[in-house]
Amino acid sequence: MQQSVKIVFGRFVTFGMIGIIGTLAHYAALILLVEIWAFHPVAATTIGFGFGAVVNYLLNYRYTFNSTKAHRDSGPKFALIALVTGLLNTLTVYAGVDMLGLNYILVQVAATAAVFLLNFVLNSLWTFRESDAT
Image (tube, rainbow, N blue to C red; front, side):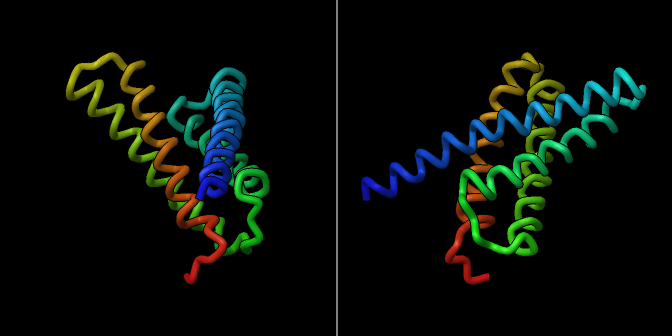
């Protein structure tokens, strides 16, 4: 039991570190597209999100979960989770800022924490679960 807690904690820490790298990829693409190529920020962040998601998937596949699953199985699952949690983040920020009038930084911090935890749990239990019967 104690060994499995250590494994989950180690994966959680690695998932967080990789999340930082994916976030950097997202923001690098966003800034380049807006500042250099004059993209609209919504389009740029959508493209940046795609870059961040690819970085997160590839690094989590290899380093966090050391997965042996076929990419045709784990890739679509990861993408679906990323889309759902991205929507959750957007809706949380919209609700907190526009509907409740809360400070956007505080709302984004809460949304980021919720999405991070949800991503970790869903990807652990579904995307990269090696004993998955589906």
